[in-house]
Length: 367
Image (tube, rainbow, N blue to C red):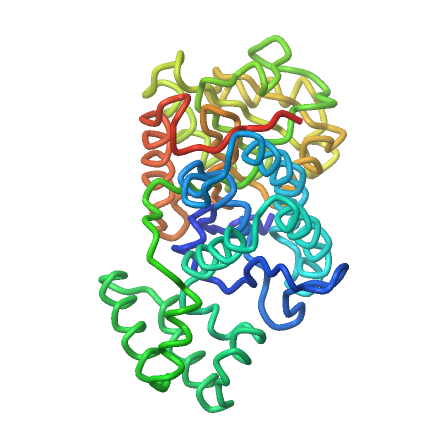
């Protein structure tokens, strides 16, 4: 069925290292700060990731009222922004611009000029070296065309497989810094500001969409994700006629038995592709034959497929104890030797090891 795509997504902005324009207090109202046709807006966006971290709020010196206001602001944009994640870059950027402008406006109200400058610096730090190629920053540094080309060539090496990612990153930084003049390096260092420890900043995407419009539930009475808060939740989309989906099911069954059911819940979402896959009794038979014992939501009307902006079978998402999407994987977990099953299983263990309420997390404003 052509559903063999295998992508690993959901890393932190710092690891992904794509360029995004920082918050600017002087940006014209209603205008995007992003080059719509040049660089795809990173999703999750560095601004939203940072605004989910209490350590960032501490760094900015925000009081309780401002923390709550910014938590509300980020929760209003991060889900609609996340739904754009798989659109073509130009379409994604056009739709993301208004959401990011809304967040910019909220930041301009909530932050003092000094706090806004520091937040700019944190966004640049987490965006990393690719931010040098963003048009406004390139202009601030007065990068010559040949410098931009050489920097782009150096950064292209960072996305290639390497035995040592840390070594490659260090080599790339040395190369890029050698392309800049001494004055440009000083300007860049000034824009970055004092280094910040991002180890407590987690890869939070958004509050997971609630399960709605389910045709039928298998193996469970109707569930709501809000009632599963306090547990790590695995949500996966599949359909019984998809061979790539079938190959993933044993891994989900393994997680279901491997981990403490009081700490982890799996939820399958069966969204059919063909007319035959809409047969509820057939869905039930195939689930039983595959040994599925965890809850399955039958999504014949595609209500949840659309709410999650899911576009490929199979897909699997990991939610933390607060109900936020943290990691996801498209396609067969072990497609052509990919380490997806182990990588996602390790991420499940990582989320299980996190406390339900952490001082590193910003307030979770309710919708």
